[in-house]
Image (tube, rainbow, N blue to C red):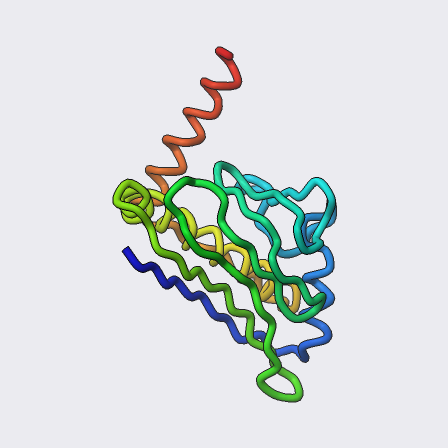
Length: 169
């Protein structure tokens, strides 16, 4: 199956200010990634081309990185995810920027089912949380993502599974 999944958000700030936040990605002071509600994004050697990392069960390798502009990751897990995801910051005016997160991949049959039933829903909620983090950084009025029933159910299932794994293994 061919998968193209795109999330965009216009931020009423110039690109250099939005880009500043992206320098914190994967650090202990990460201002983008919603690590309080989702598995943290980790890279053993930081954000450099060739470094391997991921979040939760998703693994990838950095294939392109231009600080303040974009980062591109090639999927290595789950098996059957053949493609990449990337995060870009585009200037759309003197005082506004657009953040774009894009997945482009082809999936095997098993991976397609996993994407359609589980991962897509969780991925969409996670990315929206990250985009809200950026918006909230520049805004007095704080937004919060409202998860749909399916996302709430999947998160409860995985949280319970994680607790059992930690408790009994």
